[in-house]
Length: 112
Length: 113
Image: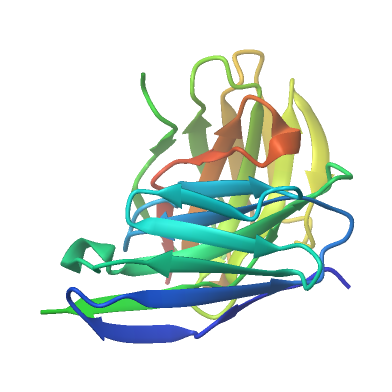
């Protein structure tokens, strides 16, 4: 069964600290994996996209890694800011063109 | 470049009523998909349209339906509303539906009372 699991479910960190969010998936075959940031009351916004052959992709203070062998991805946020407070959703796309598979997200709260 | 526009932003309906939500994709995008987001279930796929044809459908009852027009605008309809239909309904559009490159709208918050 194709699944995407994210951990932790929620996370609270101090402003300026780093954090890492995890995404484990069983989707196969695999085309690409995206990380989205969703602010409260808004639609998700794409942060990074990685294909099977990519290991790391950065977007400013956000760095995503992918291990296609173990079917794991992580999103590392460096020097967190209050505006990083949001839900982070991992989305996996199979090669079949079927529907995408969403994780339930990690809720990140950055406190001053 | 305008993003994905969803209307209305907020909606309150009573049980048993029906509702129609609208989505205007990014210009040039022919793929539109719909999602339901609730705190307990996260994002769940409803259906996807490409060039006015439904390509994929999630596991939702027949009360949920949609359509896409020739200008790629899409509507989603929910009939006989239930309390559990209260959710944020998100629409996303894409130039190429196979690469996962969807851009989401801000959603319509539906509350059923």
